[in-house]
Image 1 (cartoon, rainbow, N blue to C red):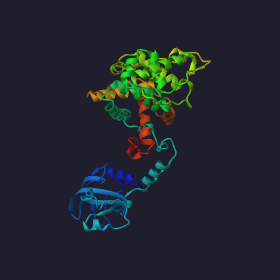
Image 2: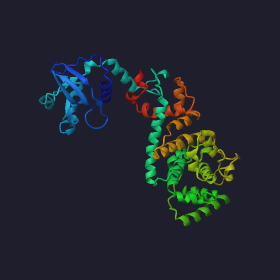
Image 3: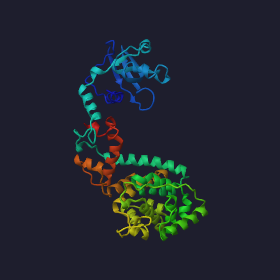
Image 4: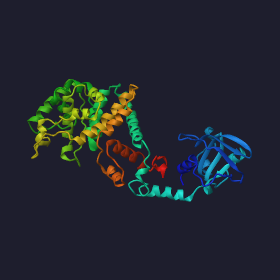
Length: 417
C-alpha cells in the first residue's frame, strides 16, 4: 500500500462496502468524499461527513499509518486546522491532538479488497515494456486518447518555448533557428547544436545567410573544426571565419560536437552544413513554416536542402570518402523536424497570438506517417494500430509520461481495467 494508492481508492470510492465505522466503532457516513488536492495541504478538500448525528464540513487527511500525522508534522501546520476526518490504512497509535478535538480516525484496511493491492504491487514490480502488459487490451484505449496526448505534448512544448521567447525578447525567428539546430543535432548532438546556435546573435545569421560559405564557416568555426586546415576548402572556411570573428566580435569559446557512435550520414559536419544550406535557401523561413497549410508544404521547404559540394565525397574534414553522392535530407529526417520542431512552434505561435490552431495541427499529425522506433515496435507487438504520426507521437508521449514513471493511477487506459 502506498499513500498515492490510498488517495486513488478514496477519490474513486473503491471499497468493498461503505458502512464505515471509526476506531471506536461509531458509524461514520461520508456525505462528500471531498476534492482531491494534489498540491500542499490536506489530501481532500471541502468534504462532508456525519458522525453521531452531527454533520461536519472541512478537509480529510489520508495516511498509511496513524503515526504519519506526527511524522509529517501536521500538528503545527495551520493548513490542517480544519480537518474533520483522519482516514488511515492502518491505525497504529492514538493521536491525542485529534482525540481532544473529537476528530474521528477511520481505519480503511478491512474496507479494501486485497486483490487490488496485489494487482497494484504486481504492476509496479513488473519488468515488462509497460506495467499492464499482461492485461492490456487495445480496445481499452479511450476515445480521443491520442488527440488529448498530442495537445498535452504541444502544451508542454509551448511552455518550454515561451521561456525561450522570453529569453530572446519574443524573437520567434531566433527561437526557430535554435530549435532547428537542436533537431538537426539528433540525440547525440542536440544540446550541443543548440548551444552553438544560441552562442551566435541571430542578427549575424541574417546578415551572412545569403553567403553559404560564410554561414558554414561560422558554424564550423564555433565548433572548433577550423584550427588546423586540412585542405584548400577548410582554409577558405577558416579565412571566412577569421573575418567574421573580427567583424562581429565573436567569442573565443568553442563548442565541440560529438562523432562517437554516429553513422557517417549523421555526422555533425554534414548536419551543420545542411542547416546552413536550409537558411541559405530560404529567406523568411519562419513565416513560410508558420503559414504552411499542409505537411507537404513543409516538406517542400526541405526537399532541396543538402550539404555543400565538398561533402559529396567527405564525411569529415580532409578525409576523402569512397562514397561520392550529395548529402541530402532523408524524408524520415524531415518528418522528425516537422514533428519535433515545426508543429510545436506553430502551436506556440498561435497560442501566443490567441488563435485556435489545435484542430489544424491534429490534421498535420494525421497526414504524417508513424515513426519507427523501439517504443512503437513494442506497442505494435501488443496489437495497437498505429497508422499515422498522431498515434505514434501520442503513444511515445504516453509511454514516457505514464508508463516509464509507472503512473498507473493517473492513466486513462488503466481506469478502464
